[in-house]
Amino acid sequence: MYILRKPLCLFGIFISALAPVFSPFLRVPVKGNWNLYQTDVSLFLITYALLGLCVLGFFMRKVSLYRLFTRIYLGWCIVAFAAVFFKVNNYFGMRLLDGLMAKTIDLKWGWLILFIGALLLAISVKKLQPIVGESTEGDTQY
Picture 1 (tube, rainbow, N blue to C red):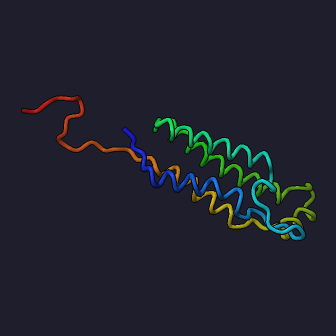
Picture 2: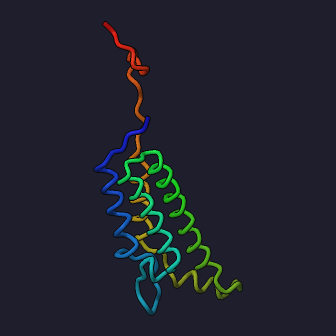
């Protein structure tokens, strides 16, 4: 049986909802810092869709569904980071231009905040251990 640590869950939802909008994910030389929406709109929308599914599982009080969606959300954050990293490093397909672009565009601390929020969501579900000597089948002891 799984239990949900609600304060940890709500804090993770809060961080995960604010990080893609307000924290910088890329540093582009002329344009400045970009959040996740400016980096890639489809990554932004899929991230919020998966976060919405996590919130739906939370409000429906389905811990197993919430646990599944938080694992998917954590995996998606890793895939999104890898996609942006490889896009920055292999944009043109030519070694010289890709090297110059990789040196000028920097990944910022917004990714760390997004991962912290996803990790908080993933660890907010705890497996309940039965107490030794306690019956779990509903037997009554007299």
